[in-house]
Length: 129
Image (cartoon, rainbow, N blue to C red):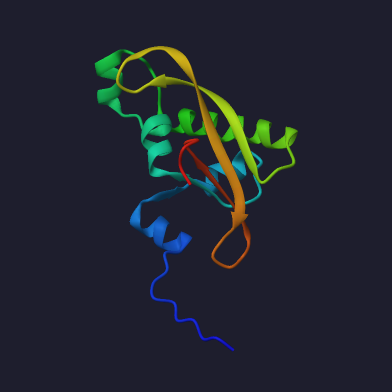
């Protein structure tokens, strides 16, 4: 038998603690999603994060709660139509920097095993792993 020593590992819990992933499970449950959900930091910053300075800079009236709901609700709709462990779905979103009319972006959600092999969902940019 070959013994393999694990030199280092980086768990989902580590990524959540470090802020690489943002836990949005509470809101996801409100949206009818039964598994734990996390967004990558990139998705959070581009499609959810919003503060008063964003509104002052670009004139769009938005808030984080509404933007998060849109990310999760659109995932829920797409997930109900598919049967795969990876779902690509569209999201209409106001750009934080420019404001203006919403633009379409594509997000990717992966259903996979968590640290204890339980099903978890991670929502990310299409080019993220």
